[in-house]
Length: 179
Image 1 (cartoon, rainbow, N blue to C red):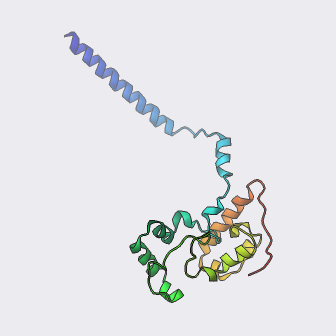
Image 2 (image 1 turned 180 degrees about the vertical axis):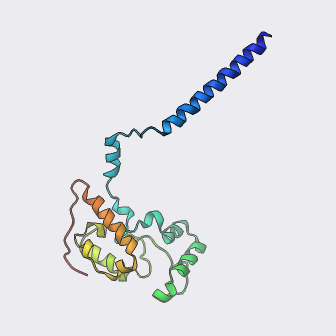
Image 3 (image 1 turned 60 degrees about the vertical axis):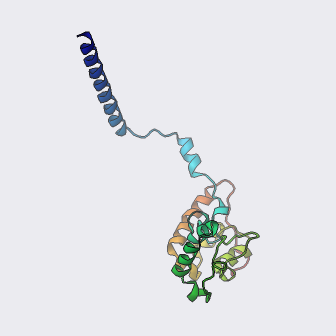
């Protein structure tokens, strides 16, 4: 008989402990979040990594389909991007997996993709010594057709520019040439 009482007592204690834990967890959800302000501020001030942005500010290293397909040498994905982006119509290029690739618009010693030489944004940023348009003091008034085609990217750049300006030592640059 002693074992039955002991087991019953044990199960009752476990049930009560479980209920208490559930109550604490549920109550904790209603408490305000306790954050350390210094840590949160440090996250906000994390510098913009221009090596991950194209000249137009697009985070191609993180989200570009063609860049990813190039890295993975995925011919199916390259073909899909070729068709989706209308390379035949835009550049008059027939599909060739050797010609359809992207190493970003900052390829270093890697080959440049089709159409890169004609990119107005890339040419302007390079001619003015900028890593991205985010650094340009004329971004807010830039009237290049590119921004009309990609208004969401323009808005993204304006937000990034504000974030960039919050970085210590950040300064906008003047245009030397208005390409």
